Structure formats: structure tokens, C-alpha cells
Image 1: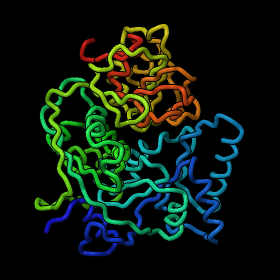
Image 2: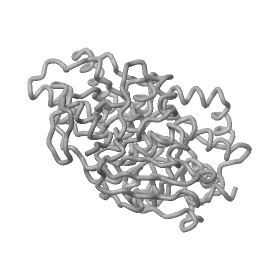
Image 3: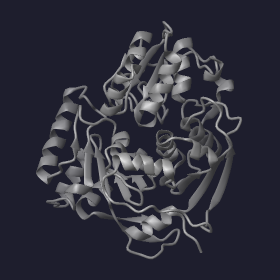
Image 4: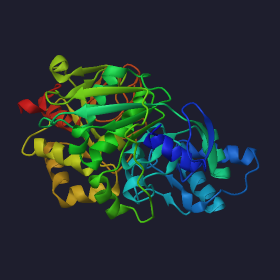
Length: 419
């Protein structure tokens, strides 16, 4: 009986020829990623269990990106403590302010993750790295502390749902639209502790950056991990960024899936997640005209250079609506520089946008763009839970950068295909 890509990766990590769905295994960890939000507690737990060293300093990366730059004294103190702990444990891969950016963008772009690896991170959207063919999942502070200490963890082998996105992608339909369409169908717990394996001709049409978006938001359906088999586009990307050896893993033709979902993208409209859940999804035709106070373009979901190019193309020569605040946040220093060199930053600023340094700040309601009670934000981020981007009385709609750009101009949710 054939095996899925996820089952094969976990078998390798467990030192086994094969594993079965539902089986508990102990897997070797290839990379541990920590952020400034969760790492303080992980370091504290390591102290409580008497851990004096980490398992492999070359397999640990810590990224300061949420409270970055520090918005207050408490956050500054937290960042200071993280820096000191990294020195104490010999963690050289500390990606500090001005040197990296949002973790889920820079981890693959800086070559820290490779196909076939098992990656854990102290952030739920660690599922992002499945776009290069890795098993990657988010964990809590205690599990991260154990992973840092032992270099291995137990996992229950998840069943796999195969999602085939078929058809030719319409103009201005992006990876964000595909994953929102799926979430609207399966719900917030439709893939709870399962693998979402994405495939189909529509996925093959997408570049790596859109694939990262799709895998990033797999967790919004409850998925343990999300993954896409590597193809030529993946290998082209890896050739530029990945310096360590790797082996490509693919699902067998006779692999067993718990379910298969078919979604035809041929006539797909831009998709909008309405308050207050990423699975509360409607086509743009059903929510067009909703007035907004703020538009946010950025985050680990849609802050890459291709996202900014789409937004800038639609904003060029236009002006942000007088009742709207537009905030654009590149997801990394590299993206920031590229946006400047291509003239995208100039387009945003001339249109009336605030152009930020890389940060997760606004996405999780920390700083750099929180909203007040009663305000409406159209955002390219990955979550719109009540209070996610600020006040509990605020409302957040999720959409692609294309929808975000035209909405910033019109002042209300707008279909980019009509502009």
C-alpha cells in the first residue's frame, strides 16, 4: 500500500521504513524555529527541567519579528532577555531587527528549511514551510523547550486530505483566494490534526510565494501540517536559497487519503473572509461595498515581493481614499529593499500609504496599525478573530493584495477585476 509524502517524511524521521496513520512515533527534528512571543517561556521551561544546552546549535533559529521594533519597555526587555539566552545557549542563528523580517518569510528565503525535513516552530503558521515539501508544524512553548533540549518529539501520524485545485486561474486570482475558498468549504476544524496535501493544475500555475500563502493558512482549517510536492518551480527556488543537501519526497500513486476535495478555479471570484473567522468566506460579489477604515497589506501570508507588485500595479497613479488608512509592510528586509529598487515603495507613498519596516506587529494586534472599536479593516493577514488586530469591537475582513489595493482606493470592499 502506497504512502503519502507526509507519512514518508515522518517514517524517515523516526528511523522507520514506514508508519501508519494514527501511530505514535518519536521523530528526529531537523529545525526548531522560535519567535520573540514564545521563546521567553521556552527558555524558562528549559531552566525548570534543568536543560543546560541545546541539542544542535545549527538546527535552531530564533527570530525577533512580533514586537519588532519593540513598541514598549516590556517588549524591549523581553527582546533583551532573548538575546542573552541565545548567547548563553550558543544559538548563533538569532535573526534580529533589521537583519531578517517575518519568520515564515525569512526561514525558507534564508535557506533554513529543505524538502523532506521535520520542522517545528513556536508559531501556528509554521505550516508555511510545507510549500517546499517539508513536514512543518507549530507547537507550544513546552514542546519547543523539549525539542530544543532533546532534538526529538513524539507525533501522531496524521491522516491526509488531498485537495486538488483544478482549472485555469482567472486574472487577479491569487493563492489567498484558493485557500480561503477551501476554508469556506471545510470550516475551521475540517482538517483538525490532519495533513492538507495540495495539488492540481491550478497549484502548478502558482509561484512559490502563493504556495507559501496556501500552506500558511492550512492551519486555519485545523491542519497539523500543509504540504505541496516539490516540482520544477520548487527546485528553481531552492537552487537560489537552499545550501544544504536534501532529497525530494513524493506521495505514491496508490497512497491512501482520508478524503479528496476537488475545487475548480476556472470561474473563481476573489474570496473574502468576513468577521470573525477565516472560514466565514464569501465571494467578493456578496460583500462588495462594505466601507473600511483601514487596509493592511503585509504579514507572513501576503507580504512578499509578488504581493507588493500586484498591489503597486493597481495603486500606481491612484490616491488612497481620504477616509482610509493604507499600511504596507514588507515581510522581510530583502523584500523591503526590492520594493525600493523597483519603485514600489514610491508608488505606495505617493498614493498616501504608510510604508513600514518588516514586522508582525499589526497582524496580531501588537503595534504598527491596530484598529479601534467600531473600525473595519480589510487585511491580507491570516486571521480575523475578534480582537486579532486591535479592539474586540473592531471588524477584520481577509482578502488578497489585489482586493486590498483597490479597496484602499475606493474606500469600500471592491472587486479588483472591475478596476
